[in-house]
Amino acid sequence: MKTRTLTALALFAIANALGCPGDGSRIPGVMAPPPGTSLATIQAGIFTPLCAPCHQPGGIGPMPLDSEAASFASLVDVDSIEIITLKRVAPGDSENSYLVWKVEGRPTIVGDRMPLFGPMLSQAEIDMIRSWIDSGALP
Image (cartoon, rainbow, N blue to C red; front, side, top):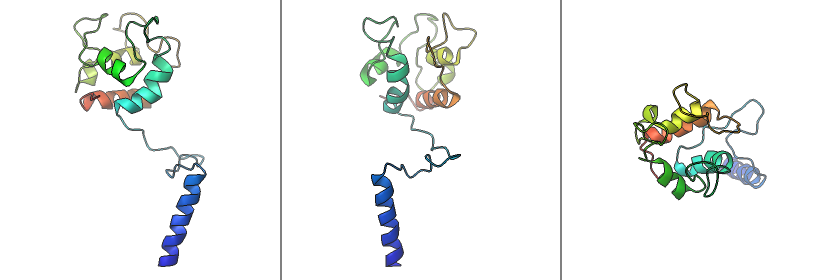
């Protein structure tokens, strides 16, 4: 039993040192588990690389999304300037959050689907945003 445990630990250490995440995501045909739904995860994977190039101070986007603090302050419980009856992010209510409408490209939005210059978000990325909002849109 000791040998089996030591072997498993050694293999884990080697895999970890080689950059194997241990979730099967580097095995062809196996997807990694879905990422978390925290603002930090969304900021790193979506807002910073896809939104912040335009949504930054002095950028063409109307509100900064270039850091977690800026994104939270710009989105959560803030009235949309395009459809003033909606919040950009209504905590606990992704269905009535204008951010979701914009990234889904609903026909009722004002202006263009986001991100403006693409690539458009995958359904998994939109689901992450929805999950964060439905969980209370915490900082």
